[in-house]
Length: 441
Image (cartoon, rainbow, N blue to C red; front, side):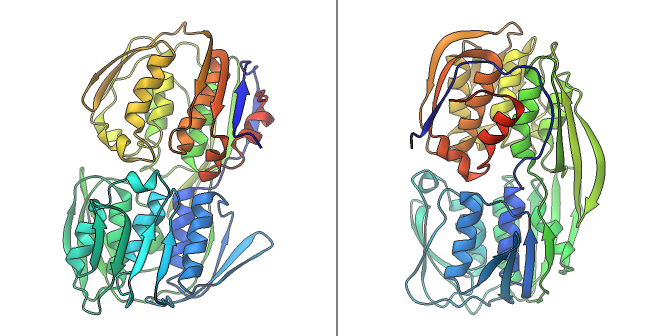
């Protein structure tokens, strides 16, 4: 089967109701927490993407069994430190930075050395951000240049830590929280604002966790060694997956779209705030609270007169996975859009800031770059007619999705490689595009 697609026609106007893939962040966290619970947890609407399947394979290697019955995953946990860890275990996290960094937090009491590996893309990413706090707990880690492969061996004498997490990384924060579950005493994290799914899930599980909030930081205190019971969880839709269809609708002509049951956690909805600042009129409907997470239907319609934005850096962490597609909107907006402090984009599956800049240049957009700051000179009349080929960028699913949305809304003849990368987070992406009316060969 060829691993590329062709798009040669812009999408026609549409009025549709869709569902997008389940939340990847919550899917992985629910699997890992179920592996630490006492009893059989039941998780429905679990995202069946490569990253999530790798999480399931990981807990199975560590002695945790699961079965799928009528679409629901039953995961049998044996409590904290309930892994059956044998000698010479090797875990492959594939492309998932979330899985790789979070699982380390659950291996802090391993009696044997465990080797953690990943694919070519993940092996280029920085793990010093989790190796440092893990070493403070008393864990021993071997790694060359703070990259995969990593060897970890736990300790029977873990000590609680107080740690300043000043990157704004939910993966780092969650790794520390998972380590704290296995550590006697109270671990304290002063954490820069980032996704809070782990904290919300621990609260839902009635785990002893305290959170004090101020404008820039959260102070999180966790009492270790408290067992928690198995649970039921229905995973909501993923705002990151929804974002590509939001922008598709926004840039198409005379179109309307409703996306059902999406997680609108405030730590994830920076894209909605930014796009509405640019003149979009994106609305939430049927809002409800589910186990601490806000869920809603998202309604969006086409907008012809989008304006530039001077994006406040405080929104960066809540839109970090969506900036590539936000850049595409800025390319069609009137005026100069300004974005600052986007260095964290280059810590993702690929160097997304670099790729985003090059992508905009490829489609004829003037762009200025000053380190990790960029200015995008929008062109509301942008229409493409040339031929473009987008190559394989380290299996980065979001680069593939961005290219599809650009082709469907701007025109031109596109060959887009690495369609299999969609399996990382949204296996039904192309099927959903076709359902809306996009023509893909």
